[in-house]
Image (tube, rainbow, N blue to C red; front, side, top):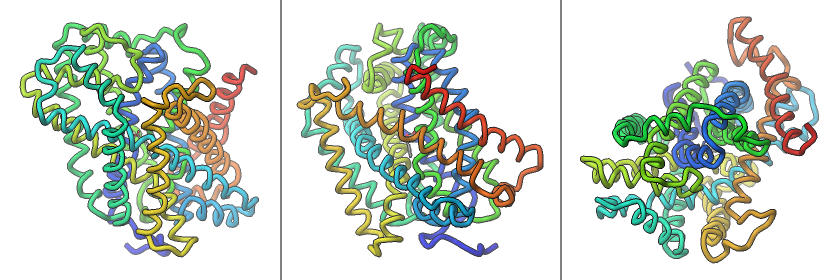
Length: 452
Ligand code: PHE
């Protein structure tokens, strides 16, 4: 089947290709690195419950909306939002949503690349057997040494950025489509193996208890905001990544089914990562609230002691690197697509410009883990500031704007036409996107501001 209006950047070869790319975008450091450490920092079970509620009430309806807007707009998020507002007869300034998203993606990639660089450094450590028979203290020292070295971190950050840009240059059907096809299932298998190891540590129940028995006295407004922000972050929502990918989606594909698959896979991976990590934390008397280093200080312990640990450790960090890579390319895609559409620059040049600027900011992020760790604004170093600004503020606000646009601005017939749902299904989505999602984001913000 041919499409009347494919994007100028190309189109996914099939529904499966889109699912892979979008799942690749969603499943990344957010699931394996960030979810466990923010869960640890925010006391466990209650945080997980709020996060799951946000995935259901906000993530799923907004992902449907974002894919839909992208596919109907067929351009970079900025230009899609502009032409969709024209079509809907509303203020063209809605295209600023695309701008905000592009900037958010850029800011996220700056630190995302640094963390992905850590996973590359750990591939080498795993290869040279650095974890074998090490105790918790030695593993911790390994991580602290990496943190203390700007040179090593900049090296890996640079390597990661170059690889990302190489892939983005090749466009939507480049090598990644093929790579992700095989990597995602393998990552899944390794996580299951790690869960198996966690079961043997003697602290499995304690870990499960921490993750799944909610104690709501442990969370405050800021934890709720973090959980909500993470729901957007982990599903790649609120900044146009999924919108950009949606713009390469052929017309006949079911947006709703695809969304359920992506959100389901993403959630399962995050929970498996949590189940694999927390028993290790408790079995080794580590701090659940250790922060961004949590997975790097726990999982190597498992690899150092389980049979076949050398191989699994190596595989795990290679897969983590690929999971990060399939997310990072989507973080920069809105900017590259927009540059290529508007500034009349070649795709590869657009990549070089945006990649270099992002890299430079990333160097600042590296310093925030060592020589600049004392430089703080609102009590946060540069890494923490970028993370808070993007995940907790920009993505939920972007998601709110997308929900309001899809629910209130766009013509209902157009949404119906795109989603092709049975009447009850469509009504359910409409109710969520018009009322539930905007109200939830709004209430959480009021709560954080202390108004509620
Ligand atoms: N979803 C990705 C992850 O969990 C991160 C991401 C956020 C990617 C926003 C694209 C857009 O790692």
